[in-house]
Image 1 (cartoon, one colour):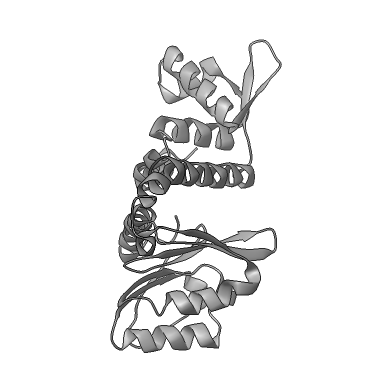
Image 2 (cartoon, helix red, strand yellow):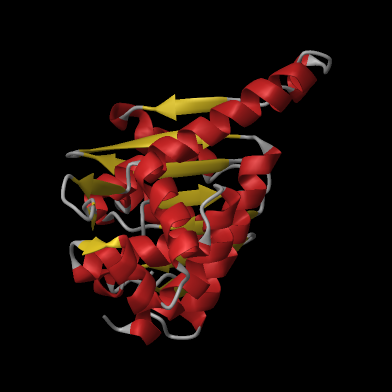
Length: 246
């Protein structure tokens, strides 16, 4: 296990993960089990130099989240689920957190505001995605864009970005393989991004691949826009330092 690589990775994502209630210790133990394979709680405790009591608590939380499995051996042996299954779990957690925030805060507050002030969260099907991208790029004069799916950058989208760059601030993150250069657009390179997105001053469009189709989530929640902006600035900083993975 490359400890320095894992520690660097944890340092980059821990702040964002904490928003979802995921601790750095949980990420570290999951990563260790994923890379090292099946282990007992005592072995994990010894290898990571974490007390047995704390390790048992962390393992219990990970098991509750469904990130690890406890095999029926004596002593019990733990193993991590796959990264694909983990990412599905995290996406479900994000959806739950957003729905909780909407139910407990946004909906009650929106009910006492004028209709024009109401916040919305809209699911965008694959068939409407390109149209929504163009519409989102017409909103405001500042755009933070991360594109990891090359099929999103068709001629219309590229031309729209180029036009917006003449009178707006546009930052764009793409993988190295895209080989993209656009006049007036600040472009950084970063590989292995999770999904794509467009952030404006008042809205955010998140784009994810589900099996073989892309779909989106469009919101004007200020809370979601702020979190997306913080995360974009985080990966922008990583890209500007020459990092190539996240």
